[in-house]
Length: 291
Ligand SMILES: Nc1ncnc2c1ncn2[C@@H]1O[C@H](COP(=O)(O)OP(=O)(O)OP(=O)(O)O)[C@@H](O)[C@H]1O
Ligand SMILES: [Mg+2]
Image (tube, rainbow, N blue to C red; front, side, top):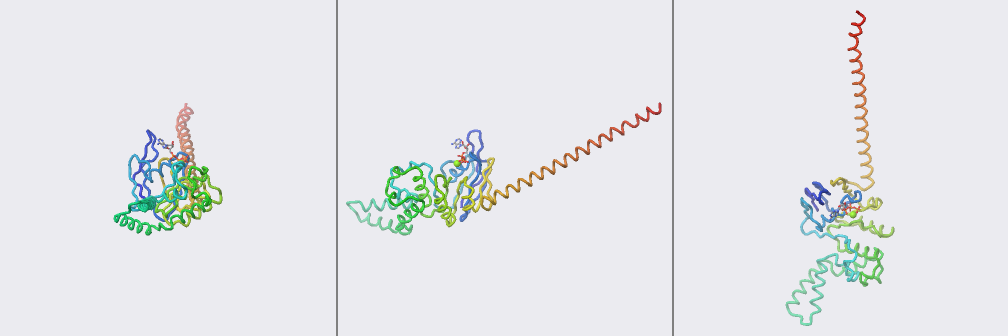
């Protein structure tokens, strides 16, 4: 779970977030919406710890692993594609690296043997033996064919890199998955694959998207960022859209009613004051007629 308490963020004089209090619960998929520049990407960066808020607090259930779709397409240029995906699970990757380094040693000591067996235990517990096949399956699902799996990232086209980075975020069943506009650069078939993946994903997802159809397929909740406030609504995008339209209509009907009442009252006052004016004239008229 992620709990956001009294979060505020100021960029210079501009307040991007003002006293935000929201909670994200496991099992839900939160679709983040809001106008361009509303602060969607910035909010995700605060959640993932990439930037600090001006005040307030983000609490994450201890021990939960968060995976974030990387925005820097060049970060893994010198790394093989399959390895890039596995690097999404930092702990598992570190174990693999340490294990391999020990086995590469020419002078393999008793201590090395003990450490290696510890690492093997942890590796097996994390389902490490399936890591490569899981990573390959994700890549293939995202349209990266097998002959590219051992290429270096720098040899891939821009839209292929995006898919590898997406596979990296999805890899290893993270407890919390944070995705900023993941459908950019994906074709319809791959978007459908991602939708199915997220629908079947059991943990917490927070995803920014401008794609209404995608949000309708995956989101269980809508997170609306508007005028420095963040509000969470149950339901998918269409449900949020229709209920917010209805609420806006009710507000406008209410305003119309208030406006009608105001006019009625104004007319009444005008009529009333005209009558007062007339009645004030009468004695004078009578006085005139007396003379
Ligand atoms: N480091 C920064 N310093 C100052 N202003 C910033 C900084 N980062 C972002 N902003 C501003 O904060 C606002 C929110 O930016 P952000 O990228 O979070 O918006 P967004 O909702 O993701 O927009 P889009 O839909 O275009 O992706 C923008 O006006 C942006 O210019
Ligand atoms: Mg953005």
